[in-house]
Image (cartoon, rainbow, N blue to C red):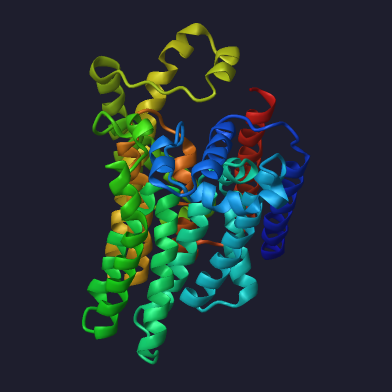
Amino acid sequence: MERRLLLILGIGGYVLLLLITILHRQPPLFDEPLFVRNLYLFDKEGLSARFLLEMNDQAPGPLYQLIHYPLYAVTHWQTPGIRLVNMTLLAGITFLLIRIITLQYKVKSGTAIIYAANIMAVPMIWQISGMALTEIPPIFFSTLAIYWLLLSINRADQSVTRTVLYAVVAGVATGLAILGRSPFLILIPSSYILLWYYRRYKLSWISIGIYTIVALSICMPVFLIWKGLVPPKQALVAAGGINLWHGILAFAYGALLTIIIAPAWFVINRRITIGLVLFYVLLLVLNITVLHYSFAPLSKAVGKVFPAAVTNVYPYIISPALATVAIYYVACCAWQAWQRKSEPVFLFLLSCCMLMLATNLKVTHLFSSRYVGQAAAFLIILLVPYDKFTYSKCIRFALGMIIGLLSLETYFLFR
């Protein structure tokens, strides 16, 4: 019964998001007009050095234009057509998740579909799929890269030709993902975990070597023209070194996604609980007296329910709570890595998740939960062994979709 309910929630969530996207007839809003404007620049300049240097108000690379430009005859770069491109790619991501889960965990396709449906329980997916934003295309290509990379590596009965072919197409997909958003560079160093474990096989060296060369050959020319990882006119997004708070928020949000999908990932007992409470109290005291970090989600709602005395300290109470969750999450990830240290694909996927979340340390101008959503596909595959089909999972799944729906609608109703 639980399996059927989860399947209904997953399919129903996608259909609902598709209908909402079709019904949203508002012209481009939020960041959408900026990306569409660069489509017209692309139409004028093509994929040239001038285009790459003149891209304005767009930190992500040219993948967005490469996807949307050929579709002009279908979408006319107008809503809702331009938004439905991401919905189509979301369906593609789900299909690839099914294929990867079936390949990696040797489960039946019906079970793999339920695991893959977790993509609809990720709140950020609703925002980045229901709008013509830039995160979904690189997520699609990164998922495609993982599928082909796993087909390429450590298949002793496979011909050299197949190994090379899979490595090449995995490299192409990775290069395109990086051109979509530069944080997907993390796929390349993470792949060397696979090489380390399969280093005794000559084909593994060939596979990872070709994969790396092809991926870098696609994105490096763009970075050389930019003289960095973002267009020159957007260099401010990486200015200022490291923002520790953004990293903490990213790992705290990663913990939230893990709770929704598979809370069994967390190691908890009485001693750990007491330790977490004491650690939170210590951080709370430090924050109020020295650090003064503030973060106030739902501040307006809290202000209507609680008196001013509470609302004044509320932002300083939440910040150490999120920091505690983030540190606990990282500790649990380290524990799970140690427990499964003999499983290279698991460690590869965990590295992808952790490094993707860590890239938020370098995004100094702002923090957005959308950046955390970029790790969703990696996380869903990683958490399969910890995911239990229960009624409580159904409730968490529904809550994740409700949060996603509300966050998407805020862009359209409260702009």
